[in-house]
Image 1: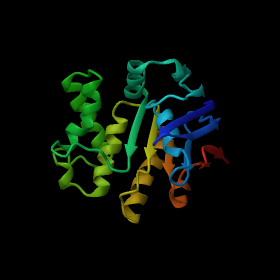
Image 2: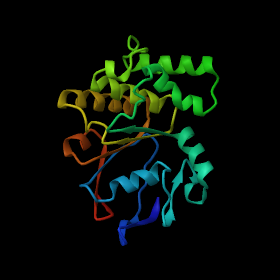
Image 3: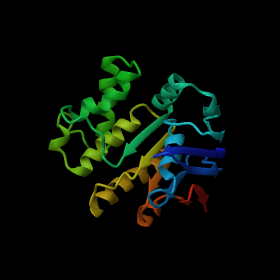
Image 4: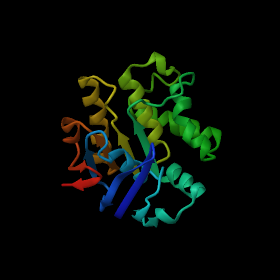
Length: 218
């Protein structure tokens, strides 16, 4: 990412969310981006996740220039190359853990038998083999976030974006989820970018950066 700027119009006022961001994340890195509300970190995550594009500057993912892609191409890149984990889990309430994890594979057109096998294996890998058919309401917060992590990983992405993944969890469960991310990075070399406002959470990453007033520090 080089020279990335992003400006939004809010209530008739121009808000410069990003002001010339230069960022390189190497494959296999675990990077934390810290910042207070309004610092620009969520806007940066949206661009990293191909949910938005810069007004100025360039962003490359796996050697592909994202800034010249249209909406359909961006959607395909998101589904193929990026996994998302959010603070609020974003699970379908009336759908089992297994079906929640299968959902990205449905969108990717993966045959039913294969997606069932892949989703089952991913849940088992994250210690939820006995919770496949439980609804989110029947799971603890930590288990729900593990389901969300499984869903993010089932498409075998090259980049995992975790946006305040422990924000709704108690300290013990937060440590558990951060341990899962740490294990994925150390053992499997998964590239992770963690967005957080908590310094204790950021220390789990190998590299910490700070956002302030739309600029990246550190």
